[in-house]
Length: 278
Image (cartoon, rainbow, N blue to C red):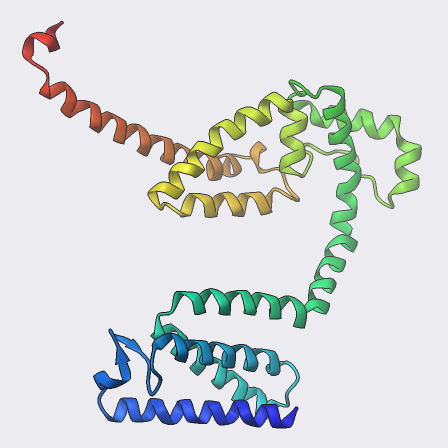
């Protein structure tokens, strides 16, 4: 293991020496390839491949080293990744990204396990479960058109009263006065049924498609945020929650409508006066 560490450090030292030569010589063209760094290699892809592997090596080693070696691993990761970026090799970027994700999952898997364990054992999460049971039961009773979200409080009160014995045996906590299902997906299903779900998707999917085509990535990012937030809350019964979803949605539809109107106006001006009058 120490031999492998020393080999990695030797490669890092060689890269640092090459970078110093590159800077001292004033960024010479013979160490570049069409503006991309190649140093003493034949092609930037070769350099990016080697430094990409070196980056993954130091990331992998960082967690098991002493404090001094961790500093070296940090510096090595930064330098090797910077060289990958200067090589501008898209394939290496993708390879480094996939390798980093894999190492992040494998090396820190025990922390991921603790995160999910804490989440599922959290008192708030446990208290949500009987609420979700009520929402599921309500959807099963009216799967097509739903029950109306404003009826959830009374439905929940009736549900926990009718199934009090089963719920108290299953859950340590059963809350009484609840205004919403505390889950956006179950809330939409309970309130508006299958028809409401289909209509909401019919509104959202075209807007997502337009956002990707127009490269307006903020809208999908907002939706991803909303999707995560909605796992443990129902924001659609609050003004801020409604605004967060429907304002960017209205922006996407408004932008599309504006483009359509701008296309129609020149076509109308091109028509003869008599045709416009008709």
